[in-house]
Length: 82
Image 1 (cartoon, rainbow, N blue to C red):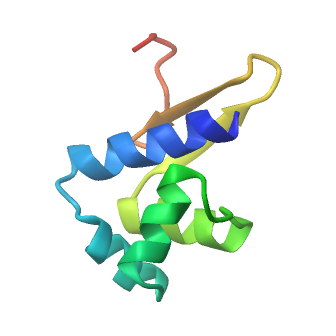
Image 2: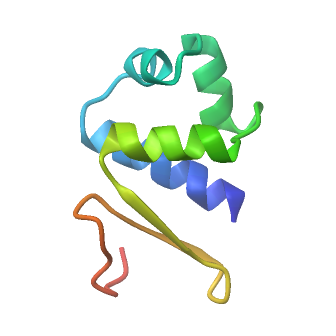
């Protein structure tokens, strides 16, 4: 599930045209460290996850029963698949 979360973060960041350096600045970390977060090499803490969601202006909904993440920049998911 962690991979799906990271994939959703990258997809949303890119769809908004936000660079890794901008995300890193918002999180108070270096761009190389942010890159490692997106690639799974560095830990995605709860604090960092919340800050990423705030920076992207999104809401993440994780449904462990279906083992998928539903991420929608409007703040909700309409149930349709990608």
